[in-house]
Image (cartoon, rainbow, N blue to C red; front, top):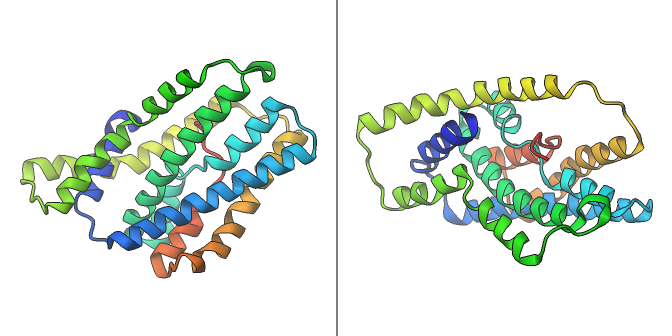
Amino acid sequence: LAYFVLTPAFVFGYMSSARIDGALAARMIGFISAGYAGSTVVAYLVARLTRRDRATTAAYVMMAVFGNVGNYGLPISKFSQGDSAIVPSAIYFLANLVLAFVTCVWVASAAGAGGTPTTSAAARWRAIVNVLKTPALLALLPAILSNALDVRWPLFVTRPLDLLSGALIPIMLLTLGAQLAAAGIPRPNRDMLTAIGIRLISGPLLAFALAGAFGLTGIERNTGIIQSSMPSAVLV
């Protein structure tokens, strides 16, 4: 429900009507991508310096690049910054979704079970193409076109979208709780604590350092730092 119905409705509903400067949006996408890419580099270097095997190194990288910018980042951004944070947090959500899915598919398939590559390059590219079929991303292009053309949708279109968009955050929070409950309480070990530390420490530090370089201020800066500070996504 959240993945196939509510998220596309949320993306289309907000991104089709958002009023945001194109250059600012580009800087925001560059900022969030640079931050998560930086965490990925840190994770890789730590894994290599501590002589982790190939599969564990891949796990470090995947946890670093894929923050929980959806069912945790969106509500935290809204609760802390208000309704004005919804559009920027959605932009960060979509940008990290693309970066993380492509990176995780590539890294996971390259590492494989036991450190042996399990798929060909062609198979990895097919997997990445499948990423682009993600419902949220499929809703993005028509939303951008609708925004650019300033389409005014009738009420029988916008009202259902508003209802579905409003349901996304509560359903995401409930889903996250159910997933965490099903996973149980893990036994902490060195790799777990290291990987978690990389995500939770490098993310906000890089965000604070990069915000000025990308010229972000106000709500875009605050929301970007929050989204950069999220723990690893359940989807990893």
